Amino acid sequence: MEIITGVERRRRWRAEEKLRILAEIDGGAKLNDVARRHDVSRRLIWQWREAQRRGRLVEEAAVFVPVRVMAEVPAPEPMEVAAAPVSPPCGECAAEADRPVEIVLPDGTILRVAEGVSLLALRRLITVIRG
Image (cartoon, rainbow, N blue to C red; front, side, top):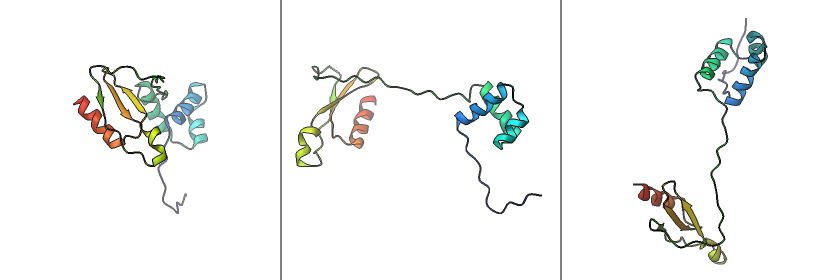
């Protein structure tokens, strides 16, 4: 007989952990042994295996976004939208906050904004452009 004195919580398994446990079974280990070793039910391992077969449980790959640093800002293109610069937080930061940041959207639209532009203003601009 097992007496549980506290509130039992559900464990959260990351995809990497699930795949590592499944790899042990694929490597020849017995399902019962693996389940006992990791303190997980056999039924749950079967659910993970089914999810893996159906392609719902896959290793998450890192996604990189290309970034290009340019020494000089090129001439504006026809679909350009510019935001008004935001006042810098301090007087000596004025030169730093006025540096332009160029954002190229997937459709080719170029958005140039001051480095200190607020996130809210940037979201509004992108919403208007895509609208």
